[in-house]
Image 1 (cartoon, helix red, strand yellow):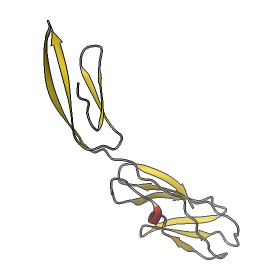
Image 2 (spheres, rainbow, N blue to C red):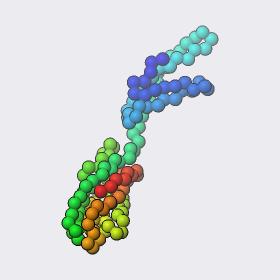
Image 3 (cartoon, rainbow, N blue to C red):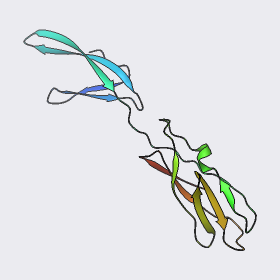
Length: 138
């Protein structure tokens, strides 16, 4: 009868109950339910321990500038986040061959433009927290 503070409880057709925690809630929650049979009611408190799950990192687009025929190092992880505080790393990076090449060096991207290339290059990279990933562009 007393609902949980950090989630919802629903009664299923078979009489069982389903507890659903609020988004990103971790910790203990309690609720009380009442069972009535033959005019007799009994209440019971239930404590639920909600354990954390891994949330995906969030990769954010970056901007970098360099001169023609000059490589540039880009620290793309500096604005990427992980709500769980997991260490982030670059899983992969690509750029169209006509624009140049991109490598992962010491946790950063090194973009080397193709010879005489000028204009906008679009690098796509994937960040990982060791389990889940997200993608952004430079």
